[in-house]
Image (cartoon, rainbow, N blue to C red; front, side):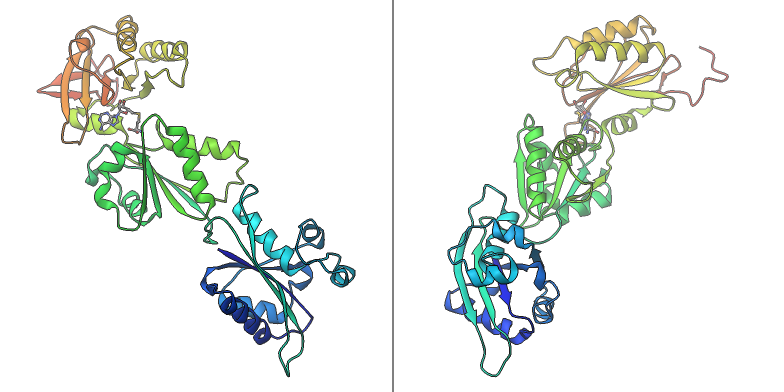
Length: 391
Ligand code: SAH
């Protein structure tokens, strides 16, 4: 993208500025459609010809103070200009400053056209033009971060709002398995960045980086993005970067979480007070998880266990079973729901005593009933209330 630095005498008409820009771009084989911004000194922020030129072209006008412009090293400083406005360069310094502010401090900025002065016969005023090139593309839009929950896996279990967000975004970022699940929503020309499951923080940082360039970025999580999903990681990272809450803008699209999709496949196990506990001790100390298991068991919550068991993490589910058995009967109903709403869905009904006899992995959600939960004809039901219950 190109940044056009402009200095002009008071009262220089729009058409003189227009002709000067055209001439510079033609002579240097530059495309006017690549102009990102017009930059000048704040004294010219109300210059009618310059404002009209920018309005006609719908180009943003960026004004800098003399102090900021003075700090830029330019090839053609002028003592006369310095005496007049307090900086030895307006056009060159403004173009370079505009390009470097948008491209980032570490970016390479090149002065493509050194300052040139124009006058037009029969017209008042004079205009100076310089052109700088930034390293990065720049859209001039405010970036948007859409944090999207894609539900358990099947497209028709995703909200229409989430589907529209994925179809409209410039970039879709997510764990490759989840990107595959929404592939039919993608359209040509969209950027898709599918990253391995382990690189969650990198995904968050990358999404923010792209949004800061003005793109609309959909970050996808399975289930709900705000439940053990990417929404928290992205917002945490934004917070650590000193985000102002507005740029990039953020919108969260909810989705059906695993506890809901798993429950729907076996009946109504979550009918009374329930909680979710993740058995992954990657980001949470194990003592905290044990404490929660004990508290939830004592309080008779129905419990949904997320991340119950991985290839390398096999002990936790056995410890959880042990803790729960101290507070609940061995015949307490348990559902093991694997890959709900996906082609390889598997459902097993077991009890607290027998749950370890069945395969459990990272695609499984384990639902553990409360003291009133019962199986009936292959369905798992927790009564709506405790009143009148005869255990
Ligand atoms: N954000 C997700 C949870 C991510 S944590 C959500 O709201 O659902 C990953 C864990 O979610 C898995 O280990 C598994 O316990 C559960 N899970 C995700 N999708 C599932 C599905 N389709 N069926 C069963 N469990 C699932």
